[in-house]
Length: 320
Length: 157
Image 1 (cartoon, rainbow over the protein chains, first blue to last red):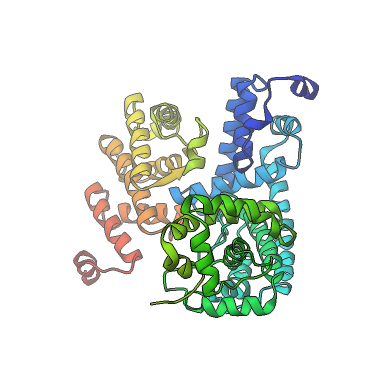
Image 2: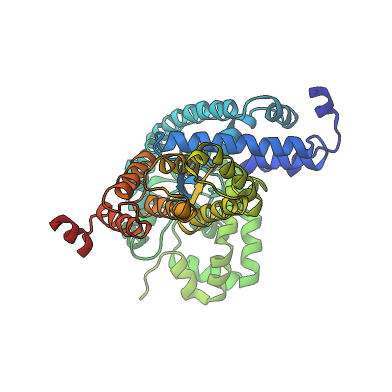
C-alpha cells in the first residue's frame, strides 16, 4: 500500500503547510486521490475521537463538554503535536502514517518531541543569556531575565501546545510570528542569538554612545517607541556606510547628516542602502540583514524625504 | 477557532448532526418505556436540536451524546417524571445543564450538576419544572458568589 501511495506523481509537497501540516497533508492526499473520501472521513472521525478523549483528560473526567475556546485550544494542541511528529517523516511517509498509525499515537509522539524541544529551548535560552547584549534596554533585559524562561516553563504541551510563545514587549522584527508553540520559541531564540552576535560585533564604545542617544526610548518602554537593538544598530550602521564611514561605525555626526541630506533623495536612499548592505554580511546572515533592511525601508525613505531635520532625528539627535 | 472549521465534518453543529443524535436519543425509549416515558422521533429530533442550540448559545463544544443520555436515564427514574411532562422536562434539563456549566465557569462537574438537579427536582421542586428552572438560576448565582431574594427566602424557610 505504501508503494502505491508513494508512486502517485500528482502529490505536490509544495501544497503542504508546515503550520497546518496534518490537515494540509490530508487535503492534498484527498485532492490527488491518495485518500478516498471514505478514508478522509475516517480521519475526521479519528480526530473527533481524539478530541473527545482530550476533553475528558482536560476536565479530569468531570465533564463531557467544554467552552468553545477550550475546545479550540485542545484541538489546536492535538493538531500541533501531530504536525511535530509527521514533519519528521517525508510527506509520502506521513500520508501513509496518517492512514495506518493510530492518530492518538502520532499525537503522543509529537508530545514527546515537544518535551524534547522544550528542553532544547531552555538550553538555547541559557546560550542566549551567555551571549547577551550588555544594554540599558529595559524590554530586552526583561525578556532575557524573566519573560522567556516564564513562557517556556509555562508551556502546556498537553492542552495548549499550539499557543503562541512570542512576546510583544520587545519587538523582534525578524521573527515569523506565524510559527507557533515551542517551534516558535526555538525560532525566536535562534533570532535572538543572531541579534546578540550582530550587535556585539560592533565596537563597544560605538554601541555605548548609540545607547546614550536613544536612551529615552530604550529606558522607557511605555514611551510609545519600542526599539529592537539589532534593528537600531543595523539602521545606524547602514546610514554610516551611506555617509562613507567604515563598516562598524554607529554614530552619525552633524556633518554626516548634512552629507546624507545633500547626497540622496528619498527615492535614491533605499537603492543606495541595498547596494551597500553587503558590508555588514560578516556580522549576520544575509536573510537577517535583508529582513531588517525591509523593515527600514519606510522610515529610510521618509527621513530622506524630510530633509536634514528628519535625518538628524533618525540618527538620534534630540534637536527639540 | 480556525482548527474547528478546518475539517468539514468535525464539530459541526448542524441538522445532520441533530438527525444522528435524535436516533440515539429515541433509542433510549427502550429503557424508559416501562415507565411510559417516551420521546417520539419528532420529539427526539427537537431535543437533539435543543441540545445543539444550547451548546451554541453557551459557547460550548461537546462530542457525542453521552451527557444527554445520562440526563434522560437518571431523570427517568424519578418518581416525579411523568409521561405528560417528559418531553418538556428533557428540554429543560438540556437547556439548563449547559447554561449552568458555562455560567459557573465549569466549576461544577457533570455528575455533581446532574445530582443537584435531580435532588432539587425531587426535593424542593416536588416535580415542578418551573421551580426547577428558578432553582437552577439561583444555583448559578450561588456558584458565582451572588445572593438573591429567592435564596434568602428559601433559607428562612
